[in-house]
Figure 1: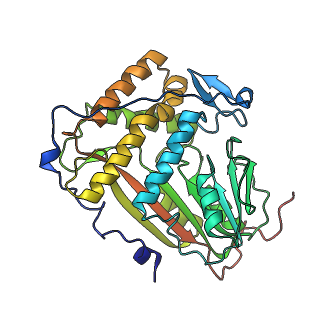
Figure 2: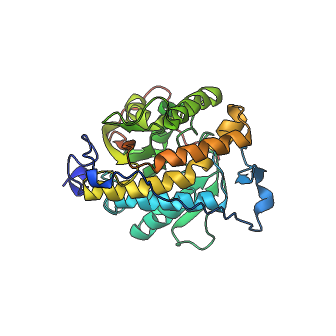
Figure 3: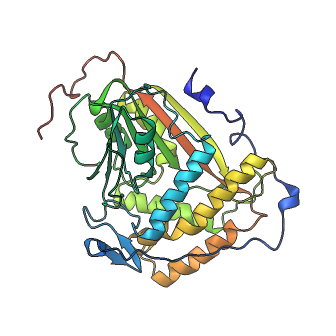
Length: 348
């Protein structure tokens, strides 16, 4: 049975035009509660603070998002959202049942790494991130490392059965080069998978217009990606990057995630509830550093914009959605060594 068969979601769900639930339109909108709790852990001095948000210090600037407790809560929340959408599955790639070595790139809070390790006791699972924010008590087959995925990897070549990447948009200078690196460290027949959300908010019925903050949001990340040399359109580029790098059997699953409870379909209504809750809480973490550091906005300007953005996110008459992409590809099971591919073990 194929991985897509196991992904038990109606073939059209989240893919075609979404039918609006007419009973859901209300001029009253809905409420949003902003929990601004910050982490005051003993490791706080290892990090940088900007405008009340905490950021990593190692390879400062390599990642644009904060790593304070509010953002970590948002990362765990979006993990639960992805599990809900993917029928409880941590991945869709048809990996072997007993993987031995697995790499989670951009592990964040470590929640995916730990859950994968618990489900696959045969595997040694390594999670890497720029911040040492993962728990200290983990399954015996889990190891976390502070590392920058854009630097040369010191792992053996042809080592991993599975390399997992999630929510690293705006972090990688070249996705084709990234997957060329992944290929060097995948075993023949091993798999890579990437999960991303788009920064674009779209609509099928024209309720998203050019004068809304969603358009500004997309422009901010377009300019920020050009300025930093790290595109924020990984959702749109992942499949092409895998193919360009030489992975085979590349499969892309693209879904529309409604923002809010406006769809008529009950499952899409649930997805929309998750998606809106995530975005309303996480937009400051996503945008603050880019807007102030790259775009030159004042802190006050960003807060006005975020308030306007949240107001539109909560408007049930606006039928917006963001796209989610799950893309996986395979290292050729019987590969021929390519020029520059490398056959020697890297120096440690």
